[in-house]
Length: 496
Image (cartoon, rainbow, N blue to C red):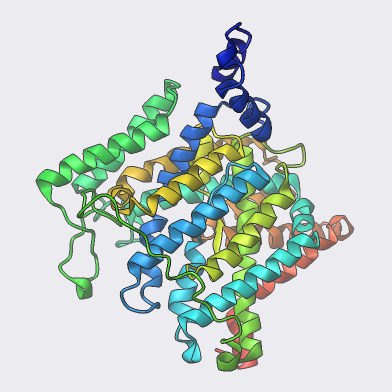
């Protein structure tokens, strides 16, 4: 509506306004197909900002994880590098693929770099980043040859729906766990602390969650963004009086604080503006690992990295497309190949930047839930990442408890697609069910997709319909069998 009004204003006889902002808005609209996708520039900006705040935790968490394996004193450089690569690749996703999906360092892969790769038979941090680059090059080749896109299109439509629903449950669980609403206790997971909700941070989470719910039900624009901002303000006020300190459940790291803030504390440390250092760029050794662990180990390690990247993005782009009603009748998003190319380049960029493989973030669904439908939202998110290199102290003021309610709300929105699955047909319902439950229960999108693929193949073969299975589904299932049994395979081959 805003754009249409602007277009009408160009018909006025005033010459001075005929070639200014309205024409620029029109070009922007045409480039990103904003009106065509039922959106507006204000909704795209709002969605891009929400996506940034929903995933801004990576600016703190990625350096925290990688610093355990990187040279001492590099946390600030890792934070700047994380923001820089995320900014470049997210903007590229918006401009090239026109898709409202942001990218940043992947949590699963950075943990593998820090806790598995670095130190294995003398492998250095630079060697591990070299493996990330190799994995990215391979997956890019699979995209350019059409293999990755063909595998995606070979997946049955209702299984794609199940992937989206499973991711909805998964990100809702992430939100609850990160905010310490549920945590490990006497059972694998329990409510709060000892079965009871305790501490001011939990109150902040609940305030943000119910505020978003109420605003969403009342159809208030910007519900998620308003919720994040309001919860952050409440957290700042509470911390100014209570001085809760950071959450800590490890006695070796200091005094226990089971009701402290998760990830970051909501107060400003020092000056709000800081000049970034990008010294991590280029900190990789492409073939250094070959001389230390051997070719067989390198192949298995790269395969582990590759499979996680290969299928995680497939699930994420389906989930986001379904939430934004961007999928075609076969469940495929527009410009699938461009999306996969940018995602593959992000893996390479993460290794070259020394900040681990970058991948598509399911938290982008928070921005889509706010109304984002085009790549303009990704450009906004990317610009926010670029700005965060200079305003890192301000970004760190948003604790998990203020941001993660958005994930729970979006999880609900994605869960609504469960009705599109034919639950009366066991041959599709069972694989769909395993896909949905394995994502949150194993804390992995890849594991959920693998469980769905393999069970789908088993059910079809059992019913004598093996010929109906797409050949690429056989290939994908074989890859997952190897992935699920990688530890015994390594033991048989005698590699660590």
